[in-house]
Image (tube, rainbow, N blue to C red; front, side, top):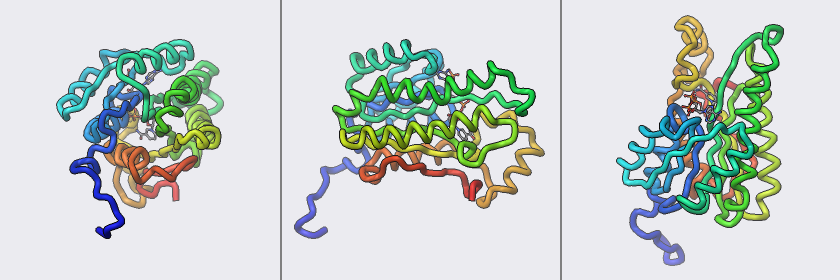
Length: 259
Ligand code: NAP
């Protein structure tokens, strides 16, 4: 280390989110749970959100076991008024938000001609409007904290996919929110980025039958399915020191699937 560099306090590199509040949606299982646990290991105070607070009990317990403060909240992310109330409660009960991870998402797959309006609307409402609801409700708090937003989209939002016009449209929309919010919030010191996971092993992909999973794996250059923890590590990077000068970007975590 040269004499012009300042040595960081011991342990700060690992716990760069010490006492900062991170709100993670879809934190009850899968990718959201892995993100919550990773941010807990960075010292963050977690606000874990799922459709019902009880669904986050295991995540909260795991975060606390890692020495972090963690709280569970329940809301339908598609409900604009309820999200505004929830964000207010998080700020009052846990503190000003520094990291917002919009991860809650659903699929309702069907071929274009067979997809009904309800399945289109619900997927867009949860995945796209849900992201907008939280970005809007937390924006003031993030501007004050010069915080970070990470929106979990999907490679399907880039490539499209058979049977997923609703999901692909919602996830492509998430890129639009990400880039626009990045431009609007940059002057206030907030970085906004997206993650685009490929095929990750969670409840969401558990229904894919064995033959289709094998076929899909063959198309992945790294020849394996990704893990929730690998997506969480990408979020970890964007909300940490490495992400300080990155905004409006998409980090693709797909083993090469989209190349
Ligand atoms: P998952 O295991 O099915 O978990 C979904 C999470 O979202 C759960 O915590 C669920 O809460 C929550 N959620 C769903 N609808 C909600 C709503 N209306 N309001 C509040 N919370 C809601 O999914 P995952 O595989 O971890 O996926 C997480 C994100 O990554 C999603 O946005 C998904 O689109 C994206 N993604 C996943 C993959 C993949 O291969 N798995 C690939 C690309 C992108 P409850 O437990 O309360 O239902």
